[in-house]
Image 1: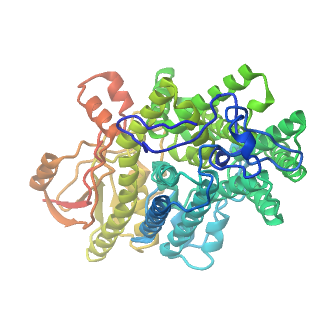
Image 2 (image 1 turned 180 degrees about the vertical axis):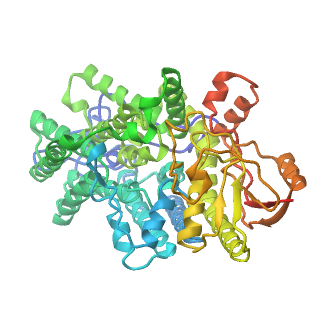
Length: 628
């Protein structure tokens, strides 16, 4: 038995009892096997308390029990109240979360959301799930959006759908953890809190363009059904749902085939080598492996012959990066991964290495808890794909949380007896509390408030343009052409004014210096001589004239503070300000950026902060000025 408390700064619960076996090499076949008593082995339980707890039979994995739990069946009122409290806390948390997803639904910015919303508005099918030229093949992606747009174009429908997905994920995940950690309601709540208030998860659920949202549902369902079958709850519905969920995941995002294939393969090898074969579970794992191999065959025969360039090359234009800029790109990417997903980037590899070491040291199959170990390997392989491709966007790692959460908590209960494990876990918790949690809250609020501010600005400008016979000339403060600018804002501002608000008597120009790499990395600049908009049909940089409009928002790459706003107020006439509530972007990452900005003229700081000179993401509201 092992009692532990988390370190200072990130305390979990001083009363938690993981009841892990006394040897790192011995395992249980499930987390709950460390928390219940086997009613049929009362005479053996004390004499074998420290022996290996894994004793599978040919037909069913045994549910071993730990002698530390109460033998009588009398309910503990205090324990019952504690369970009820955390159950209610979870339901209150997740229902509030879902409600916040739905409120203030707008066509808004969230990576590719702005583009997808236009497709939805015009009822154009989204087919980005198959792009053979860059090797992309995840054909089930966006099929949900294509079906929903046949019902309505209202953003409330789409965000309501995401709220339902979130609710299903939460209920499945909670019940899986309840099966695996029946006596640890506080830990279950903390795991859910960390997974759901993660910036990546917030991003995919408060947006529509992410196949990771249905993917997380499919993976949670797959893990839960697999656990049920592993525990010999061999109902046909579990078997069918597990296979369907696995295949759904495989065709929603390509790395899933590795996680699911590895899970099936390792379980098959273990059962064969240990001669502990549960026939239903064995067949189930064979079908999982076959599903992964079918994907490999399809990808090899159908996709690979048509690949012209890799996705990461197209997405990030790596071919045009110098060695120095490429190094900066890698350093920034890995640094962001560590700051945003330390549990995956640091804690998961650590636990996996510990498991490998323990298994090699023991030289025994009895040291393997195959269900949890195979999930660990699946999560590591999923993570390795993005390291190999050098894709460092945070939301890519979100599915891994739902693959490995049970395994990580199980082994964390064992390894926290060691100082290095405590230090690593403490470091991850500190990064979560100081960086990920505030980022997640800000991201949630910002995605909602900026969607409202975007449309308030569009509505005002549409009326302003319609009421003026002369062509309205619009500039965006701190947003120019090319890399280093958030040029998506003016790009979609033009499109939404034209296509949704049906106004055309305006021009958009730039007063900011063009990016030095504009021709090599144009981003949203179209370089179209036939475009009616100056910002697209030339590279000219001009000075705003009397009567021109200047729009300032949080996408500006300038350092915005009260002094800057005061200066704008003195130079120009403020004719409109949006009315939204939000927060400055304050987190550990922001503090690091702020310190780097104040390093002065350091070339390294300047390069690392390219396009990040507005660390607080201010102003919260959009300001529309008229040149006097």
